[in-house]
Image (tube, rainbow, N blue to C red; front, top):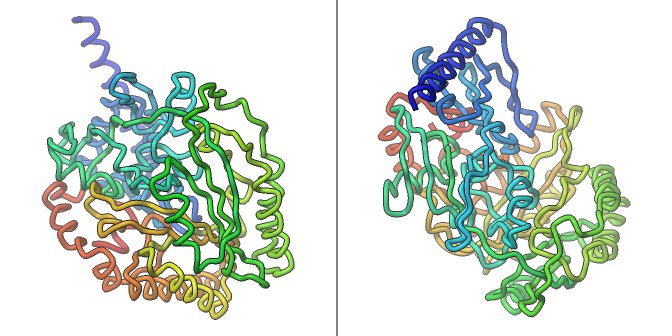
Amino acid sequence: MHNRLIYKFVFSLAFLISIILSVEAAEVCKKVNDFSGFNEACVSAIVTPKNTIEIINAAEIAKVRGWNISMAGSRHSMAGQSIAPNGMYLDMRSYNKIISFDSKTRILKVQSGATWAQIQNYLDPKGMAIDVMQNFNIFTVGGSLSVNAIGWNTNSSTIASTVKSLLVLTSNGEVEYADRNTNSELFSLVLGGYGLFGVILEVELLVVPNGIYKTEHQIVDYKRFPEYFNDHLVGQDSMMQAFLSLDPDSFLDKVLVLRHTRNPLEKRVPGINDVPSNKELDNIIGDLIHVSKDNKFFRKIVWFVQKTLLPKSISLRTTRNQLMSAPLPSVLKDWTKEALILQTYFLPKNNFSHFVDKLRDSLNQFDVPVVSVSLIHTMKDETSFLSAMSEGDRFAVTLMFIQNRTVKANETMNEFSQHMIEEANNLGGSVYLAHRPSITESNLKDLYPLIDKFLILKKKYDPRGLFSNQFFEKFIR
């Protein structure tokens, strides 16, 4: 025991010295960015911790040096949430152990830098699966919880609903346990708190049994989509992929719905990798989407491929884990001359078609390079303090753009975003802050009425402002 304590002390001291030495050499700019490519900034130190002690020590150094701290995982948030200019950049991806799994309670404990792909590969042989899952599995647990990600389960809330407990390093240097009963306020603030209330260390997640899902597809008129959803998906153990047509002949008029419904009678569940790869089709669709950004003919081809080949590419019998482990398509790989931008708007079901009408008019008016419009449903969020779904169930409308990296293109996109935020607000909707919204202070207060209380609690839990990022400085502070 004595030798172990000495080893830990020596190891921690060595880590501290390594940070200090890197800091002394870090007078030159260390550039970091996020997936949008628009948030490049210099940081004073980049730290890649592998254990909790290293994270605690790094935070103490940041305090001494007067730096802010930001945390980064896969860096796919798009509004600077992972970057504190001139601060300490904690790259959490090496803090990624899967700690334990209790098969009786179905509780999985992981470090926050673990990716969902890691977790899927761990759970699959045990017959278990992630409950709420984003479109792709490359993201880290901590990153997904910080932005309170939404999934494509049709009858689930946000990812916060699947969290049993957290260990959080707070600004006073303490490691706090938080769940819905203990430190419940901190728990609700960290989930969807954009890294502003502390470093998420360990997470207990509630997971679910894996199973076989039957896939069906249908083309639905956009005005009938809410009715179709209520008739075929509400109350089902199901997942949904849905895309609005960008074909000029049916522009935002038709919805391709891929409906995946669990078959409880199926007993034999194949492994996560026991399914033919769709990589070639994914790449073809990705290439077509890329060229369709300013070519209406290719938009027709994309819609044809989506409604004919995409349903056939998915096995009629596939598992939950197989569905939720799709590779990142080529269209979502890193960009240099162009930027791939996402915007997501949340709408009450009864105002969905009205929003689509406004969206159609606005896309034509601003002529922004939209390449995809996808739909997700998420249920009321009763966990996260700052949630767009706190008032009830919502349809999420996610727009994907491939934008030129020019001042003019950025100005046009900002104008479009501000316009659509107003339209969503007028219809009782909201906007997802993790993507790239152009939101004003008045919009923010309208769409997130708890934002002032959020700021008061930020000062309560982080009075020195240790945790910060570009998003906070630009949109909230």
